[in-house]
Image 1 (cartoon, rainbow, N blue to C red):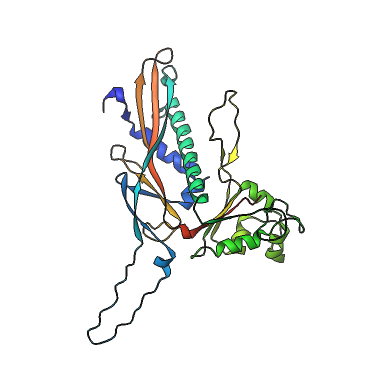
Image 2 (image 1 turned 45 degrees about the vertical axis):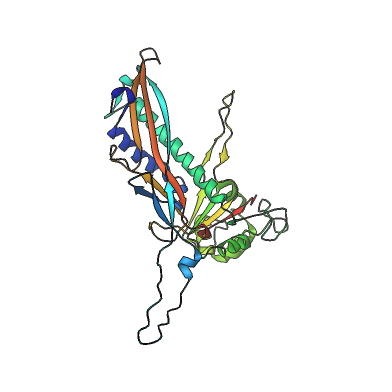
Length: 322
């Protein structure tokens, strides 16, 4: 690839891949929509419904030369097309003189910073996709003690009932969910909620709600408190930042799976480019002369991904809980 257009940096690319794994450890999207490598930016994937999982056709074979009814074992086919996402950042030539192991110090720093931004952007896309699914959510409202009321006031006489609300949401999935997402602000409201503590009973010696006893209470494999916050609005003139929870004030239940061709909430497909020989990320650099005192260099980090809903009926969200 010509120098003036930049070229792929294998070591920086591998650094981006490794660093992205660290970032994803604190995020929810990779758990809800596990990543699958694909060889090209478009293709087909299986979409499942409750019928695919539960429908049992007529199995009767009557008569001497009877033929068995045909049964299709897979879901319907959907078409995916990935979208490239990336950012670039300028490094002054004076800063490029410093080395840190096999990398120039500022190349490494810029690469890691951009990777963190790209991962947070994907977290936001997955959250937006899930909470916008038609017919796969309910919204709480008003004060009171029923399952339809908000949880912001956890007193016995004023707060809603998170136990009944979550049980009701679980029944909306045709597989029992194995994953629940609770934003940190929501967890703060239910950490000592009397109705949940009452359901946990005397076995809960600490007298508080946490991920482990929530998982036991609702028979869910994993409960995750989503802590991701960011500001996705345009840059303000005063450079101020308004942080907001990526997962808002909603609780999401889902059935997840690492299997590519099985019913589950969703998957993320990410193109693996041969030029980079990596798990999806591509890092390029190129020199520029019209910046800094001595010129400089641009570092660009990008990946080509699509977040796919595999089975909407295995996702359900309780919105506006606070």
